[in-house]
Image (tube, rainbow, N blue to C red; front, top):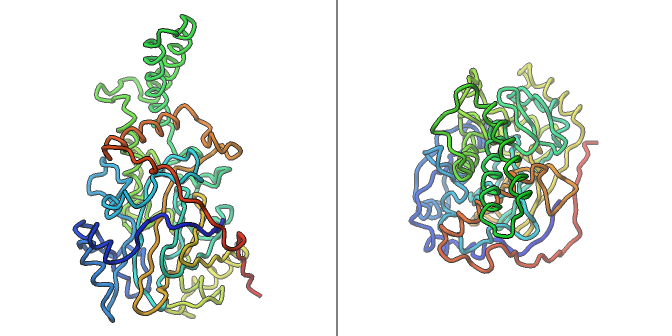
Length: 424
């Protein structure tokens, strides 16, 4: 769904961003000079946000790209990675139109390219609300149902009804949780509920009995997954699990990191073989040059080699996948992209002196698609996670802003338009 909107980031002026967040340290990504695209695993460069913005004001040069940021510590949640951690007063925590989805991460994307720079074809593991603030973006989109034609690096185990792709090396449920974390979270949620029922003077004995039974059943299921010897250090701590869920996005491969993302709720337990040493599961083996050439799209990538024996196979696969959706975003428009939709993004500055800038929200994928108010089937788990998350964020922010969960009114300036370009 493409739609016009009021900007979610109240200020996009470079001078303002420098003043507000210029001191923040972050990592920027150089362009891979061979493929002429980002997201290829090129070593990132540490910079202050202000210095990075200054570098984009140079008239010439090889401009770097500000993309997803990750913590050096996998146990630390990065829901607000730099520089968004210094800009939290400039955007709502969760826009109203996203209902009760649980936030995974927000990101600011900034670069500069008059000719256009590509992300490569890949998919993410979360629902994406992508808001373009400056410049232009062209999205080439394939649904998860066509994954088998797109040469994913990972071996797909299942595509869930909501589209989320689960891989053989670490299968996940349709909400992105693995069985262990789901059981642990349910135990934590029901333990908290039992405590609340016991402390409520209006609770009847039957209420306490039912709450206790639900907790004991969940605890038994969790202990069964733990094995014969439960870890005494294993706490029913929803905050700790939520932190781990958020931090695991470090391994999703969408930014070109070489480590493999194991899915929401990935555990260090168990051997995952050589998967971490391979290309990220979520990236396609189809070169961007072949994709653009096949679709007759303007490109800055090096043309596909006629002598490469794999090129005909890639082209045949793209033909089998059928024509993609091609969506062109302008500043002030947003795109809602469900989890695991394959996309290749070409970012272009409006003019030679301008940057392209976007802001996005990633949400844990809903799997109760017919219920806006209750978007997750395992409502006990996800209500618990959402409540814990809101309490944690309110505490970190000090005084909760009255407008933090209210989105500015959306003004539709043109009809919703899904553009589908066919190759004739």
